[in-house]
Every structure is written in structure tokens, then in C-alpha cells.
Length: 129
Image (cartoon, rainbow, N blue to C red; front, side, top):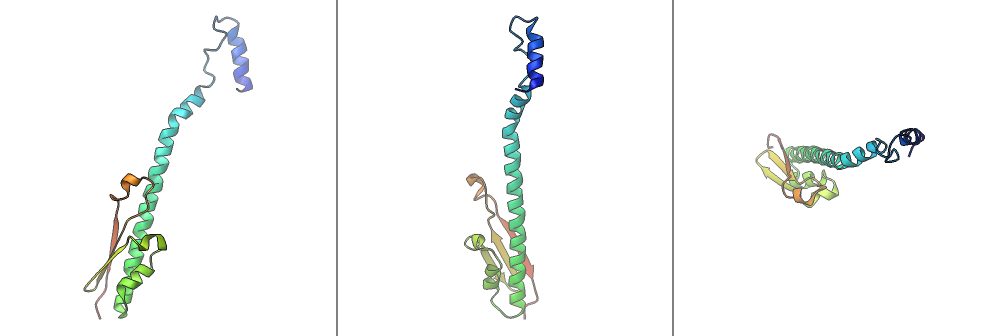
């Protein structure tokens, strides 16, 4: 308890039958505890949005790498997979159709319930050689 709160309690205790304990000391602490679940939920949502955005950028980069390999006569699937970091290679799906390379992957999730509901995809197109 702060010194200011102690002084208020002793002043209030002079004329109150409850000893002055009915003041507002500690109210901010209780409000913070009540707000803590909301702060945690907002932080989790923000982290999940960042993970989805990052995965979308990774899928786009991988699709572009695959399309560049396709334009150069190389293996588009292998190039797209090599452009992805290790954690996303296992779940990534790479498709090649004509001059278009598509990459689909699942972003990392903080909540297991979202694991099968989130998916990002990107595609890149080149003129086939």
C-alpha cells in the first residue's frame, strides 16, 4: 500500500465506524486484474495476425522462386520448397500448372483450435519456356 493511501486511511478512520477501510485504495489493482484477460486476448490476436501475415509473405516468396526456376527450366517445386523455412516445408503444398506456381501453407498458430482453419496461398505466373 502506498504512503498516500495510508494517510487517507488514517484521516478517514477518524469519523468512520469501519475504520476507514471503505476507501478506494486498491481499486486500480482490481481494475488491472479485471482488464488482464482482455489484454492477453488482444496480444494473442495480434501475434496470430502477425503469424498469418508472415506466412503469406513466405508463400509469395516461395511461389516467386518456383516461377523463376520454371522460367529458367529448373524444378519449380523443389525451388519453391527450398525458399521456405524448415518449419513450413512439411505442410506446404506446391502446385505447378502451365506457367503458374501456387504455394499453400498453414501459418503457425497459438491456439490449436485454429490450426486447421487458417491457410494462406500465393501464386506466381511466368511465360513457360
